[in-house]
Length: 144
Image (cartoon, rainbow, N blue to C red; front, side):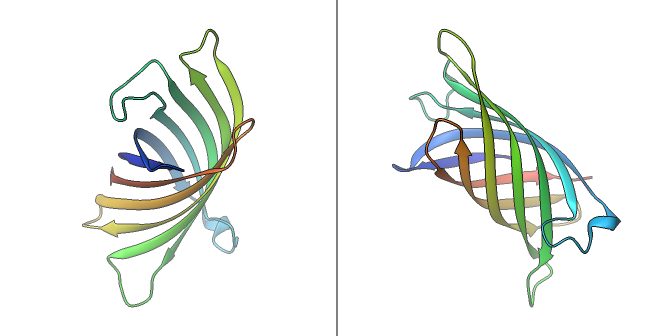
């Protein structure tokens, strides 16, 4: 997903670049928490320049469990929940700082065709030593 975030509090615009891979498993179809296992890498600019790269960044590698579900009366829009956990690395200080990261996301996918879609997502994130924070994201995805 290539998109942007608004970190709260303060609605600060941030660059957020995410690449992930996931696979839906048939044996997880009845699991209420998810049917797709995911791996994702995310870079987020944590500096003062919003969408421009600065020395202060966050790099996160995470594993997740995603649940896709249909929305009533539409085939073009589907919903999803996504539970993730991983390691966030803060850069730009005298030394790298690694922290445990967890997140819960709720989103909608607007499907243009079998390969192109827009994802709209609200996430609640927790990094050890940092208070809970939320982000609103929108991004484009290409699937094969």
